[in-house]
Length: 115
Image (cartoon, rainbow, N blue to C red; front, top):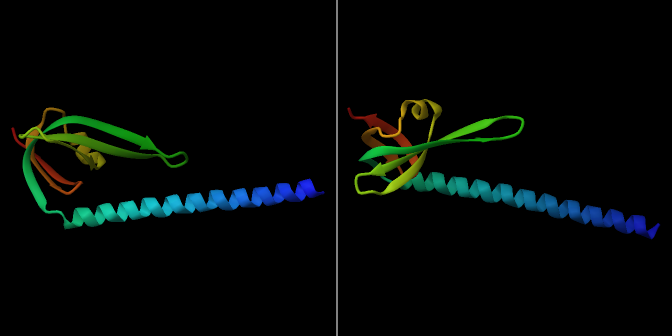
């Protein structure tokens, strides 16, 4: 009988620990997201000449599929930045496009292609 009681106590402690870790991770991820939003909001809106050098997408989720789109831009100085874009902008951009990139921190705002 003692073995069963000890086993139940162990499972209870394990459940509380795992639950605590999950809650901690959720709070940590939320804080990081809020921090990034505040940082972007406090950044100036910049427009620079840039070239589209790479595109990629990432699929995540099990029951609900979520797709994220990323584009790497290269400024004339050679500095590169990867920004998350929405699906419509992702579809319109082609590697090698050159134009005016407008962004705020890590937030993509617009890309105006120059011909």
